[in-house]
Image (cartoon, rainbow, N blue to C red; front, side, top):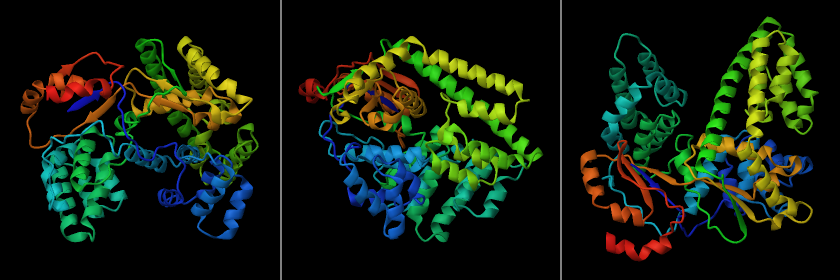
Length: 511
């Protein structure tokens, strides 16, 4: 079942992403961060000298970072933490913290009551009982992607090696092998693991990371019944990111694309640019791997070239990592923060320097670059750039902390991946030395909230019949579209001016 809520949703938020991190939560959330030095250097105000001092004290590094950081940067926020984690490629940890901030910000909601229609009252049920209840749907979903699921479960130590081997045997139907795999998971829960609940949580995380819609829904349902937090994975990203609410006030400036069509065109162009660049980078990586295999001495030459290039001027820590890289594939992983689909000058220069004979690849990279330039010069993007400049330029010479928040209000739904592409594009529009400072004041709001329910023990027909009698109520609480199994039950034009304040007097009457 899919519900889309229109307009602004009013909340009574808890701790927000722009709040200053407390020492306790800062240390708690960053507990799993091993390589803390690059992260610390990306925090606004922290210098290499600070890092050296923390390193020498041999105390709790995370607590020491927090203490020094708040001294040099009184406006420190969770947003700075998340940006720093992303800069040093700790993307999964950044997602986890982002998700936690969203969850905490939606606690204490007064305007909306979420009613669970899914018969999931499972108090007293064991993890094995919960898994067994989902087993039939899980077998079917796993059979579609059996090898990848098996490999992922084995990599996390959740199934024995023998089971992995059994799943790769030819000649047996995929659904039978999937059924056996689920049986092994049930056995593990019953006799082989000391903490069955944590084991099932780990299995759910693996399923969600497969980025398959049905597996995600099943895993989400299991986690709900375990009453555990749902991880902020890329599959859930579109839904989770949509639930970032902000009250629009006088100290905020709102920008929109002129029309929905312009926004859709921008979204599609960004998507095509990302897809094309991904394909090109696969070829670039393979070509460089072959090049180094044929010319072993070239690896050291590539390292020296990169370390002495202009791209490393502000990235000394990356230059140091390159020195220890044992393969060209690792080098590409290390330099990943220095290029993307919009700015691929580094990749073009490397290809020109080391694989000049690969003319076809060079031509395709050049064509990609031209497409990006045309897109960047298009009227909607130019207008967005001008709007941003008009918002932040008056504060550059004075005090950026007094700059109002810049809200970019999207009129359509954007997936999590496409939202990230738009954020990268916006980052390119900002002054080089002030990017991180200005980014703190920019928020992107999606046009609607998307809520997915995986409903158990209830037929689609009975849900359609029930919700069909609640159309007036759905309009009053801001639901403008309702789909059950892709069947449109309710479809209205989105009301961008909707608020609960204006509709609340009539809600009880309609229910």
